[in-house]
Each structure stands twice: as C-alpha cells, then as structure tokens.
Amino acid sequence: MRYTGINHLAMATADMDATIRFWRDLLGLRLVAGLGRPGYRHYFLEISPTDMLAFFEWPSVEPIAPKDHGVPVKGPFAFDHLSIGVRDRNDLWDVKDRLEAAGFWVSEVIDHGFIFSVYSFDPNNIAIEFSCPVPGVDISSHPIMADRHPSATAQEGAEPQPGHWPAPTPTPPVERRIYPGEGRELVLVEDE
Image (cartoon, rainbow, N blue to C red; front, side, top):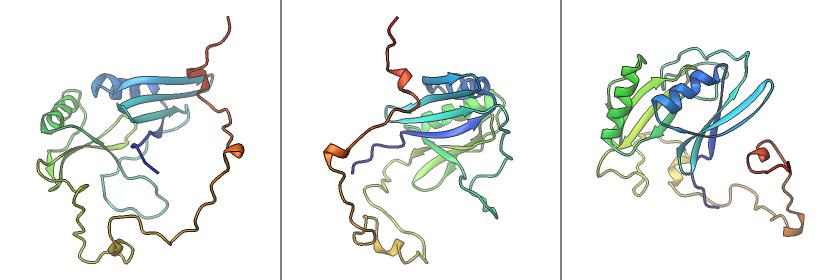
C-alpha cells in the first residue's frame, strides 16, 4: 500500500458560511467541492493537492467546548486537535498574523525541536495547530524515540512489523465492485 496523505478530515459545523469565511477567506484554503440538498451540506477545502478538510453542516450541532491542545481528558473522547503543515517560518508567521488581525486567539510560536507551531481555534472551537519543519531536522528520514519508557510495541521500531495480523485474502478482480455514493453529482453531467 502507498498512502498519499489525508484525503480529507470530516468535521461538523452549524454555520457553513462562518466556516468558509475562516478557512477559505482568512486562511486561504480553496473551496473545491460542495454537496448539498435541503438539510444537508458537505463542503471540501483544499489544504494541499492531496489533502482536504471537509465540513458537514448540521443545523443542530453546537460548537464543541474549548479544550486546550494536548491536555488530557477523562471519559469518551476521540479527537484532540488538527495540525496543518505550512512550508516554513514565514508561512507560520503569516498564519499567526492573519489570525490575530481577525481577532482570533493564537499562541506564540512554539519550538518543539522538530517543528515550530502556533495554536488557535476555528469558529467551531476545533483546536487547530499550524506547524512547519525545523530546518535541518527530518524525523521522517531519521525516526527518533525519545520516550524513556516506550510501550513494548513502540520498542519494535518505526517500520511496520509483520505477523501481528492475519494475511489478507485478495479480492479477485471479477468480484471487485464499486457502489455509487454521495458526491457522484460532482462529476456526472446530466442530460438536459
């Protein structure tokens, strides 16, 4: 398998217009697709050529309670924050300046050793981080485990370890079917 990135992260908003204004108009993500019908919208914003951020508009959804990035919680929980990569420190400062000019809280630039980051929240209180690489540091090429007490599985190393899951049985080509779903209207041309 070859992964290409995050195709899209899907989140929810009750106010698609405020969400578009923030992500498209303030932060510069292109609005590349929109699906909709009464009571339903699903819009996609382009982060990079292979990565998108998507929002469902659900009229009854409420913004989540603000929660500081990375602070542990108790009870059911699935998502802490979204980090979007930017090219370099100049882009990071541009994001910080734009957020501050628009009246959004934004942290100072934080040096994590391998990335520089700023933190903020979107209009839905989704915790967001913007990060750029520290010049000369490449943990992708040179993985580092700095945890003094790593889990047993982490001690096995960076590369996928075989033998822990059953081997898949490939689906024969004659049985490979793709079923229609939401979004086909983006590419289908209807007869007029």
